Length: 220
Image (cartoon, rainbow, N blue to C red; front, side, top):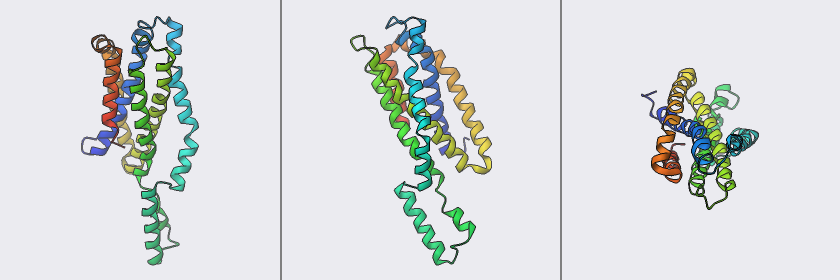
């Protein structure tokens, strides 16, 4: 993992996203909606509905993204595949199965959905960070969790399919490294949740997470 910069960076990105997701399990009931908004246990549980809705939308939209990948609507890959196809025809390899394999989109084509996910996660976190003050109705920050949940699933799908496609002979090892880093961040982030929110406040702590997410946006 440490010898593959792209895999390492994507592992860090996915670990950060899962860490933030697990951090919400601690922050929402105890700080954001529990202590600051006065939600009881049942109401605090409902604060995760937005994330769930976003994830359901992400899963429901997968047929569209599969169609995008199969039809190769990414202009760069489309030009590249057409050039390779023309080259195969010129070389008399039109009916060769190996030529057909060459026309398969590159692993980087899997990152298109990740680009959308990176933007959605950052947008949702910034929206959430600056709408948590008491003067703003609680439904506004809760709505901000919808694009966050949507973007997290898009990012995970993009990262995992890219790793399997790019490191096909060693896909199990690539996914194991990703799982290890994600698990480490998921274990650590809930532990720092309360001290961070106490010290920085809801706006500052969530803004910090949004800033970290923004730094990861160029990766896909």
